[in-house]
Each structure stands twice: as structure tokens, then as C-alpha cells.
Length: 142
Image (tube, rainbow, N blue to C red; front, side, top):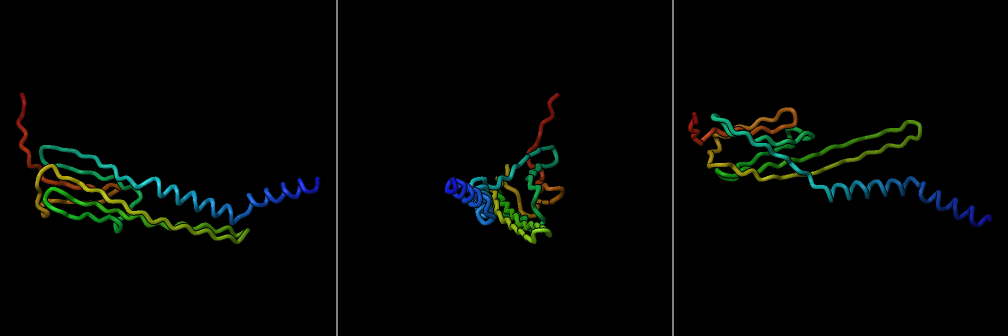
């Protein structure tokens, strides 16, 4: 009976070990990041005056967003998420720091050739708003 209790205690302490829990947590975070790529959803609105592209990037900071003019029909959006979280437990004197770094890119194809000087972009409330002048002519229908 003593061997069974010792074995049970060993298994309990093995699965209760902080270093094992930390390893499993780190492994879980790695698998989550590796298997769930950052996706940038895009909405497009078209009016008689302009063509508007909205990229939803809620957790991004302005300095982590880069919009590159590739040519007159394509833009390249790059977003870097760089976040550090810290937890301090005064009772157990454990400090936990976690740093997350993710990068996402998305090609944005324009509906017609546009000069770089005609493109306007602004970032507000987690949305990158890209505005192009409307080049299409709409015929009113009665």
C-alpha cells in the first residue's frame, strides 16, 4: 500500500509541478500562434465620390502599421503586433512575463489604376481606412 501512495504522490506532484505547467502553457501558446495565423478582414464600400477600403486591425498600434504602394493597382498592408504582458503575484513572488510578436501582411488589389498621390489613409478606432477617388462613371437610372 505504501508503494501505491508513493506512486500516486509522485504522479500528483509531477502534474502539479510549476515548471511542467509553465512548459505546457508555453507549448500551448506556441501551437496557438503557429496554427492560427493573423487574419486581416477587409470591407469595401463604393460611392459615387470615392472607393473606400477598410482593414479591421483592432489590436494594432499606429506605429506597427505600414501601407506600401507596390504599383498603381496594388497596395501591401503589413501589421506588426508586439505586445508584452506582465503578472506579479506578491504572495508567491512569481513574476510572469509574456511577449507576443506577430506579423501579418495582406495584398490589397485596387479596382483600377490609381496614382500614389491620390491615395489617402487614416487609422482610427482599430480600422485602417484607405480612400481612393472614384474613377467609374455611374449612370442614373430612372
